[in-house]
Image (tube, rainbow, N blue to C red; front, side):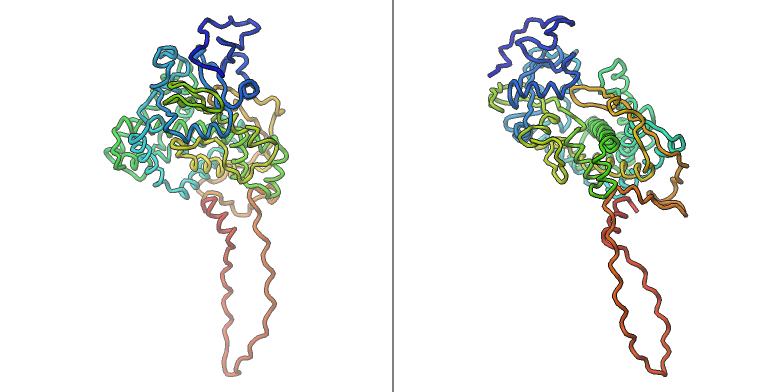
Length: 491
């Protein structure tokens, strides 16, 4: 059994050494050459240590990696033993993980609900959930559809596009800016800043300042002039958040939802474009876009891991002794492929939402339904506009940028038959006169065949003295499924 408080702190081998992947105490590093394929590294750790494994973060800071599905759920659902308050983390307290640590933005404590405990957590999360409950989901679906049409209009005449930089990275930001109440802030710089500020680049601080500047302006504006948007409801909540608390929670919602949804859209589109099985199921109506989204959340979760959780007391997890103040990595991706819950990784997971993509317990993602809606409606609307879309490269040529938190697709090049822009003033999802949706691309379950008309009844004899006017033809009423589809697409 490994004790992280007893590892040898001598420097690891220099770069280029054959043992460069191993660190002090013979532990594997979650950074460097071996970590270029974190999925393979997690499986090595599982084989060597079981479902909870010791490893090293940047600067050889010790961390436990929770690899098992059950162990991850136990950790996130047991606040009496594990907290997200990093101030109790031993490496942070003794300076091993100092202010210059590359991952400091991920574990530095902030006065937000994601890192709060007890009554303070209830106060802050209650305000966020209260503001979430005011969102008009039907209106948001119309907004997603409209934003999708506008984005597709930008490249539909070209016959080619990169669905990451031209679609997946833009759609969530456009919708989230509208939800928060700042649609005027949506632009290319906001998209770039949201991506840049979490990468640890030289410009990350400036990008964070740009985003926070927009959120602080929004907070002051809505404090003075409330509207019917998320920010105004967050400000008006009885929890009485300060301006700083409001702005910090807006940042949490914006950045977490943006990054996760961008990755989710890109992953679903890649799955549809590269896996004939899924495309055939969508094409034949055996799978809907929402079901494809759930499959993607199992196979390629938007966040592969979350740093971190911290032990409030000495305990045991997965057969390992966890000391008070130890840090643990929530292993979303490795937990989703735990052989105990997924012995066959090719099996279809339709209808199963027990994945770890949105964590669980008191800190379960509060905005997961919004992220699902953006992906569901956006992908559906894109495929309806571009039914012949094809991948413009070999699957093995696709590239990702990988960090300890996520895998972000670099680009997803596609080709399709060039089409004229759609009039974005039409009701979302409407088709111009004379143009109908293609019947050979079915992204939702087809409507049931109409029932056969009843046999004609014998006419009732009328008195010769009466003249009967012909009855007006009754208006055709849509079936239940057709009404649902029209609601789903925001008609």
